[in-house]
Figure 1 (cartoon, rainbow, N blue to C red):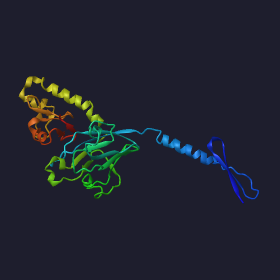
Figure 2 (spheres, rainbow, N blue to C red; figure 1 turned 90 degrees about the vertical axis):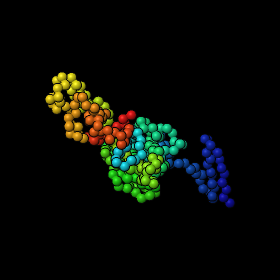
Figure 3 (cartoon, rainbow, N blue to C red; figure 1 turned 60 degrees about the horizontal axis):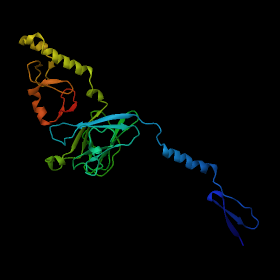
Figure 4 (cartoon, one colour; figure 1 turned 135 degrees about the vertical axis):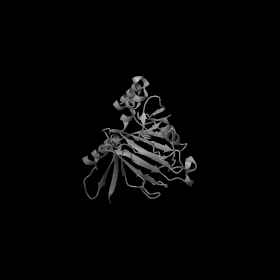
Length: 282
């Protein structure tokens, strides 16, 4: 009758000796491939992405139109190639302050105080070459890219390329958007525009021209047109000294009376009518 004996081996392993008619004793050992498999997989888990990706900055600013949308401060985020996506959704009290902070480049969440925005509304990420992408993550009220809806309600969309100057709309107005919390979010995308927020030759030249106008020619009226720094793009008359002027953060100058309706309509947000640069005047 066959019998088997269990013998403890060093290291806590056990070997089984089976005797069937005069057979030999055999000890089962894992192959070399099986021994190397767990080691290689564990090393991959410890270091899945050994080379850090390139960081690309994206800036999301309000898109100013005649129709009012949800106001918000410009949002700056740094996205890493192959890194986690930027998750866009609704602000809740459970979220940390980092999620809704506008100037928190390392944060991976973007939150808006609007009830037409789903908690997990959309995602933005960057791939190799600095190419940004956007997709709808099963939102109920929809994600629109340049006025085109990406997917139906509660359905995930395919990735869509995102370029500088694109317009993103999160949700649609509820009850006409009479209350601010029920308004959709309209976003203008700015990619690789850091040079606009720094000092450059255009800004320096514009300041020098404004300073030179006030001290040249003794303020003679006949030289007003010749001394003008530029023409106001609203009324097409010269912008010069002894006038109430509005100088935008982008250094473009206008007559204050020409810009006053635009300043009041979206205050504190301002979008230059010449270069389309958004700025928070506060």
